[in-house]
Length: 218
Picture 1 (cartoon, rainbow, N blue to C red):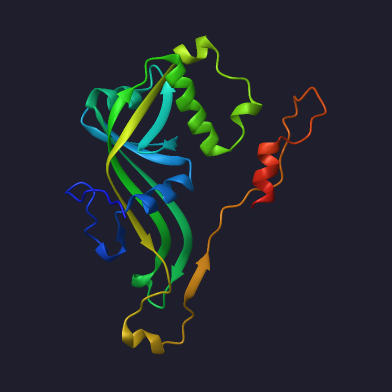
Picture 2: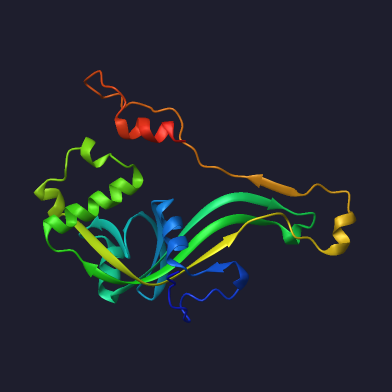
């Protein structure tokens, strides 16, 4: 099983027994989402911004406007760090101190490259959109040259990564198990609701196949 090298950047120190470093686990968590949080430094201060992403192999694609502060700073630094978290449940213990959550998370660190050619940018944007909703790219008008020229697309090659996963029941102090207090797990599941057509639709159109497929698999 292929694993990411463990170093001072990606080594999980708090709750180390929950750490996972193999590629398959990291990739699966990344593929189960499309929203990450990217950290960068601007004028000496740390800032974290949520943004959409797409994964292809060991590459992560993100995009923004040419003047986007985050994108420019990442490119200037040449390195990026981003995280993804999937919340699976609230872990409700007898003790307030031992309340927790069940989750799957990834922290990754990578090298940043600017995509210059429009063909490369189109491919990366397709990867991002397909991660959001598979099949949607082919149902949409593709970006124009003007739109591509106004868009900065970055490729982040994963150098190091780690996953951290918590599952299971509450863990209370031994003396607290005798307390007459409820404890357990409240599962959390993200799901899709009924579609809401744009009120400015000019045609009587069926729901696109990409959405129908997603709803049938929910």
